[in-house]
Amino acid sequence: MELADKLALLAGAARYDASCASSGSSRGAGPGGIGASSPAGVCHSWTGDGRCVSLLKLLYSNACRNDCAYCASRSSADTRRASFSPEELVRITMAFYRRNYIEGLFLSSGIFSDPDIVMERLVEVARRLREEEGFGGYIHLKVIPGSSEKLLRRAGAYADRLSANIELPTQASLSRLAPQKSGTEILGAMRLMSEAEGESREESGRARGWRRAAPPPFAPGGQSTQLVVGASPEDDRTIVSLASSLYRRFGLRRVYYSAFLPVAPDPRLPPPAAPPLRREHRLYQADWLMRCYGYAAEEILGAAEPSLDAELDPKAAWALRNPGFFPVEVESAEYERLLRVPGLGITGARRIVAARRGSRLEAEDLGKMGIVMRRARWFLSLRGRRLGEELGPELLRPLLAEGGGAARPPSSQLELAFA
Image (cartoon, rainbow, N blue to C red; front, top):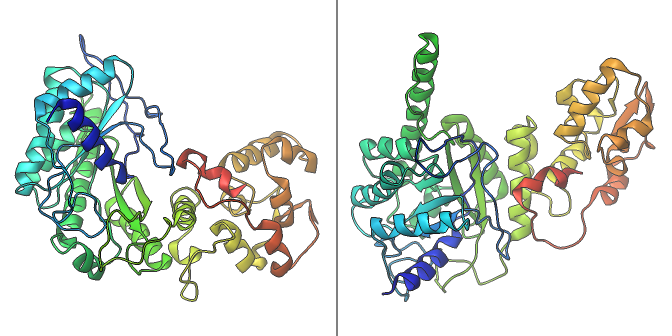
């Protein structure tokens, strides 16, 4: 197969993996090297269904011995198979980088052999890029569950970010839809990455204490994972609780949610339907609340609420369920309390806290700070006086409900979804 044909086939097969963010690293090339990765991440492009394809995103191979029902590369799929060699992938990556097509590489693979063999090939690509080509750009490697700790640590020495996709929310669904995969192995890989990352931070701290050069960090962009939404029957509460647990136990930087897209008929899967993009969007909003706004999973979805509201973002839904929390006083409320106000994001809350230190705030000042007053006014007071009429949840709901289509915005715009 010609190299161009391989590239088209294996780039197309990689598009289903959403966990390809590129933030959290500041690696740079050494003397005589090429490329750099900044904390702001790399340039992003977007596919028609909203998925991030910011990096050169490839599979090493789409040959796979696993038969996961939701996967286009599953062993029973009637599809062309191809594999790169490390030399080919290094050549392609450097050629694309020099032409300014990309700023980094996202590399995954089908499980075409023993996990150690597959992981070794991925690590070898990263090693050659770093050591032989002097490449300082972004590298994200997919960890193959079941591979050795030694290989995982080598991967972290070369990659900016690592990820092991958990894919499905429960062991029961994993056993039914991906019978060759082991939840224990996936979580074990996450645990090893978390431990290696913690050891790296400790070594860096000791190096600073002794005023000596710090060792190279282990995967400075941390680790992420992906959950497929809609291929299995679990409700949103199960998914949100799992994400919260992964953040807490393993220190993940991100959990990505991928709306299930039927790629081939299979009796194990639900009937063909449009990808649940609205549900995916709501899960991203809930995830944002947990990571950046201080919400617990139980606050977003309690025991009586199995699913996220299709019409309301989860922050607005929480506000309507907790009317006693409001109004929030602009001139005295803590930063964390301000964050609970619909229409008021992180930037707006910080601006309020900074502005009120040196001046007396007026209602018209809030709109100038980027606060969406058509939403926030119902939940704010200024010097004891409500900025909007006191309305019950049943009257507020249509004022806060979202209209329009179901497609989600890019993750960089998620804060705007609360406005």
